[in-house]
Length: 228
Ligand SMILES: NC(=O)C1=CN([C@@H]2O[C@H](COP(=O)(O)OP(=O)(O)OC[C@H]3O[C@@H](n4cnc5c(N)ncnc54)[C@H](OP(=O)(O)O)[C@@H]3O)[C@@H](O)[C@H]2O)[C@H](O)CC1
Ligand SMILES: [K+]
Image 1 (spheres, rainbow, N blue to C red):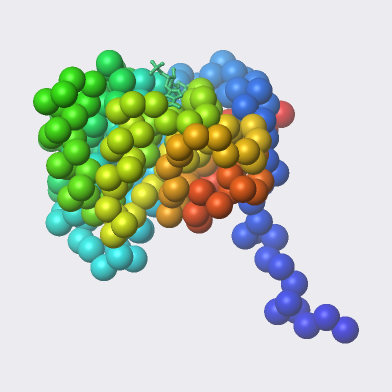
Image 2 (image 1 turned 120 degrees about the horizontal axis):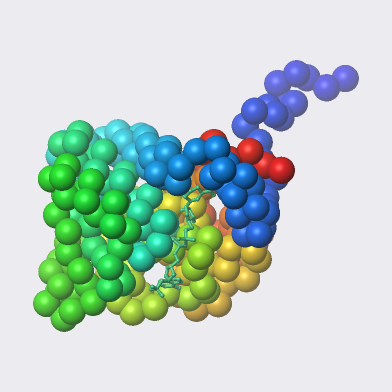
């Protein structure tokens, strides 16, 4: 006879993994009902909630924390910037580093309005300043790339990821940047996260070795996209 305590708890199980194409198809249906901003705001709230939890678990007060965001040009970076705006409103010391020519416009606007400091690491002077910020981070939010990313990190993101101190907690948005979302393959450099906040469903890289070793703890947030 099986002891009840040995039965796995179904609510703790992750939803089934989906491919990029499946997530995008489901997202298109959701976008016909709600604007993209609404979905991204939900994604940002989920990321900010996990960041607060991680800081508390590390024994840090959110207002004393130095949080650095690495933001790519897409919505993944936008989600990270919007989360950064919420954390800056909580009093955290938040710096966002654009690792492309320009990151998500609305994300940047709200981040700036919340008092966040924005740097661009494409130019040499910006990269030097960003390097110093990353080296002193208590927590890094990885918003370099998500479902639209290609495998391997490009400059200057690769350098900035390499100087994240081992003491910093890394929270990846949707998936650790540099992984191929649809497979378990690891080709090139990538982020190795302590926690990954995935939206709607985990992508295959989060649950397939060896890539899954870079995901850390996985949290799947419902942003209002129903799986079809
Ligand atoms: N699943 C959902 O329901 C929702 C997900 N959301 C978030 O949206 C992203 C996907 O956003 P998308 O804009 O399509 O793509 P990315 O943000 O992943 O960005 C792609 C750009 O990133 C640059 N890039 C790509 N690969 C790399 C790399 N290896 N190194 C550095 N940079 C890279 C590239 O831009 P360039 O201009 O620099 O060439 C790509 O264009 C998803 O992951 C979720 O986070 C929404 O919040 C809504 C709901
Ligand atoms: K990411």
